[in-house]
Amino acid sequence: MARFLRAILALCGIVALSFGPAHADTAKRKVIIDDEGFGLMHLMLLESSQVDVVGITTVSGNTWANRATAMALRGLEIAQRPDVPVAEGATYPLLNSEVLTDRWEALYGKLTWKGAWMKQWVEPTQQSTPAYFGPADPVNLPEGNPKLKASGEIAANFLIRMVRKYPGQITIVACGPLTNLALAQRLDPQFASLVGELVYMGGSLNPHRALDNVSAEQFAREFANSPRREFNARFDPEAASIVSRSPWRKLTVIPVDPSTATQLTPDLIARMSKAAAPDLGKFIAAMEPGFPLWDEIAAGYVLDPGMTTDAEDLYVDYDTQFGPAYGDMLSWREHYQPGIGERKAHVVRAIDAGRLGALMVETMAEGARRPSP
Image 1: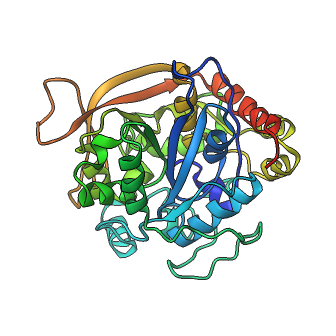
Image 2: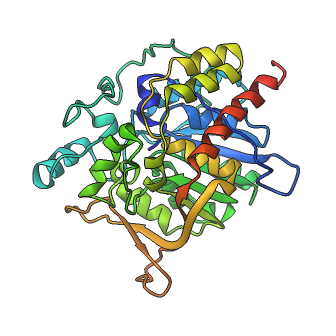
């Protein structure tokens, strides 16, 4: 869920510090980013010297896919990375919809965040509310519309083509709803087995608020009564379940749990903007502070898995029954799983927040040191 509100309210940027190579080989790790916008997570991977971003696929989630595509293209312009192709993905979830979500809320209570369907916060909050758009509304970004164009290829087809071109070599970093990945797997049953690793931000086990993190506590308190609910999975539960049962070579899940100990502070924004190249620094300086670092943890894990302080291997799936637990994360330890296709995942439960912040700053500095195209 991450990059999330920041990416809607204002395109964001972020940074990454290298605490030693994440991989023993010297070749850059090929990465495809699957997400619903453009923000700090994207910039961490784009600016890092460890990673070769070979494409971005967009999907509806925090905003509609057409707007997410425009944001990604404009972000690439600001980052001076016009070489990265962008493929637009699914506009709608597999089954879920705005009407069904309104009906669900009438039966089971209000959701804290509804993404593209969000019209207002349930209670007062210091974060601003993004504008509401329809799925086909014209896109006019506050930071200017992009001149770059999307590739014209459907995201699921792009994903399949790239993993067949580079079997076992691509890491997919997914930080929005998992609709594109589910579609790719249904179109090509070999898709997941050809991906080197899937790292996705989604799901929730049992987040706890950090006592010294007042802003993040506003987000963490929603989990007091619904500890297994998280936006990315809740937006498209059927897709999340398909992905959970697909035959990935390696599957890493970043649930919401570690994010409650993180925060995009004014100090972190200032450090990143100072380290980045001038144009990108201005972009970062305009970011809205106060949000947890959801998606940035996923990017940080790819660049420096050693920042993990607590992790567990669990079998994971998601509830697809239209009831009070619709979209909730399901998990089992070995021997307790039902055995209906769910796959074991490496679940990151806690990270070193200071190490993540330093990583973000250093990644911006790496990008600043790179020769201009």
